[in-house]
Length: 399
Image (cartoon, rainbow, N blue to C red; front, side):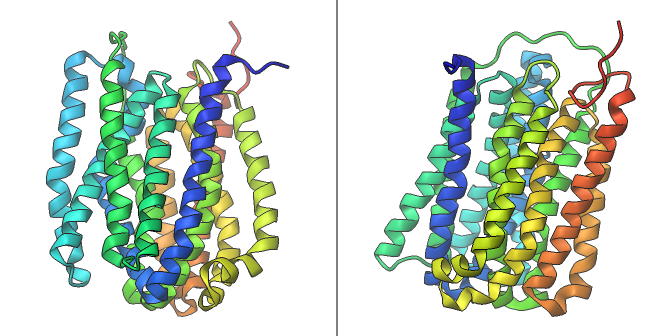
């Protein structure tokens, strides 16, 4: 059967999504070998700080833009664009400096964190614009630019013996900045005339829900440094990197849900779960020898945490896909409640499980992701009787 032209953009986006974990996997052993466990833990702390600052600055604007961009007036679109970009870079400095009291940050490191947080926040908005316009290819190109740009820079730094925590952070931030600039330019032509819309949009709830979800993913690595120390955090960071394979594998399914016209079919969620289950089996078999072989023998202690996070990774990734259905259904408050409950479950377990080091952190994270996926699934199944269904998990409405 010939491949339809309409499927090519999604296949290209899927290939870009594969490029993201592939480049991360190639970068991870270089970081692990150049920085050692303690340095790897410090870099993980920096990365978590950057992503948390970006998520708080973006305030869920990507999800809101994806759903509502075509409904907003041109004036509102401009306000959202420039307000998000300018406020992101302005507040990033305050956020980074305020949180960085944990340890002494060089001025260059603070500058990179500010630029990176602002760039990530701005890019999240422009991704939403592209998806709202059905331009999946634009999102895919940004993935290629940011992922392989980082890989190339890291390879050069490693090969020349200049890979440090600071330079690794630069290799992360600069390609993302380039990707954000590309999205900004590409999105300029996507401002189609706004469609009329009546009723409350609940955009504020979308903002809060997205921020809560980002905290769920990143806050633990920010808090764990004083609880388990840099070395154990380094082991946990390696486990988290491996678990991200599942989230990235699920990304094309989530993008397809967000960009699909009408009701996204439930088969997307089912296929995502099947793919994740197959990946979990492969990882369970291979992690025992692959982790020390790829990252170095000193990271053998990361294997138990990585095995635990296979479960957490699958739950997180599937919750990621299911959450897209909630966004399309405009059930923003339900999403906020679920992600907040998952965040509290994760953070609440960190202290009592801190004695287990990286494994304890992996267990806490997996419990949080279980709450995320389970809570979202319950809401979706109950929504089949909703008066305003927006997805394929519900029964067809009678005319």
